[in-house]
Image 1: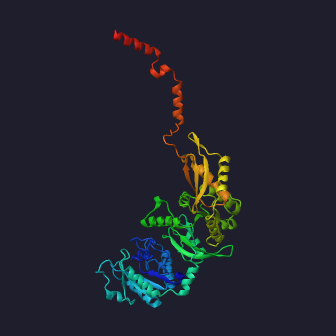
Image 2: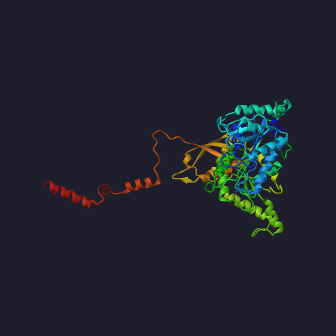
Image 3: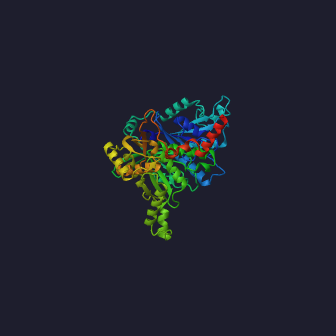
Length: 514
């Protein structure tokens, strides 16, 4: 176990006192969503603080009762806070320096005193000397010397860091040595998809705990939550993972609040920093237009995709107890036709593996991680230049490129220039002649030949340089008009009215001259 996982600091307090802003300040980056709306944070969000070698937890507001929030969701959020407080080594109890103490603050303080945990009282929003919380009022909570900070502007940050370090104590030498031995970078995976397809349920299944809040309410998850864990692969080795559970991604036109907007941005940011993306689909709903858009974001970032079809237990139940679905003959028939329809919609995913799972009963869940381990190995492949060019020649001969204007796209040479994502530099005649459909054809051919299923390939095109003063080739229409002009009789080139009109015109000029 790493040092950070043994030393845990949890931030707690009532809603809207600035816990998430303080979390981001201590983490030195924006992780938690910050907004004036109370109750934004629901799950426990964690990050590793390297200089202090501890894990920092951000929690939801204690005692929040939102009008639009179901009671079950509020209860689940408070259970997450209880979990954070139970596992914490040190608790940062945050109160609002501008609005003053409330009865809820006093009840939380009483609960913390009974817990026998190390507690630091943090008075946030202390931007001025005339805070509404007087020192004697803060001392009355019975939690020791209050620390005045401004999470927004950084006031008191250094003093707070020193206080946390003192409360945690020095890092044990044996723990420090263990941290060095397990310093291998974990494989980062993330679940993406529409709201309510089961991303958090799958995360909990992998973590083997109810670490994330799960409910039937779409949009339950708001932050992109990072969680470390280990997995034993098929080869018997233990693989470290970092899991990112993201908020359900809605179409931009359907965003109803600033919180949903920021949740969407965090989900896209999670895609950028992950190694392997799990695109989660609903087994009963099939592929929607929004699913295609989400998959397109992952491909745009060059991320390998594993397609996860969740809620397969509902399909199994339907065939075992209800006679199945029309017109499908069996569960196997439904699976095969679902997968066929899936790739008709997600035709731009390069042979991504498809795994049918159930977060409810754990069906085939471990296959997801084995697929991620395999894809991560594939990402480090080196493509031999000679074999790469042989395959390019074979593909272009088997299916020549379509003509664009008066020319076809022609490949002279190709070489691999990068991994994660795969990048291939193609030297060609004219880069603008490569159509999107032919680019996908080349990508699919290379993916199949080199075993890169699930991994997108980027082509960097280098066109043949034009010589200085080299005339551009005329278009087909311009060539046709030029040839027609050459075949036109001489009299048509001088006077469109014909030779008789020219003679009459000449005679008229002679008469005038006489």
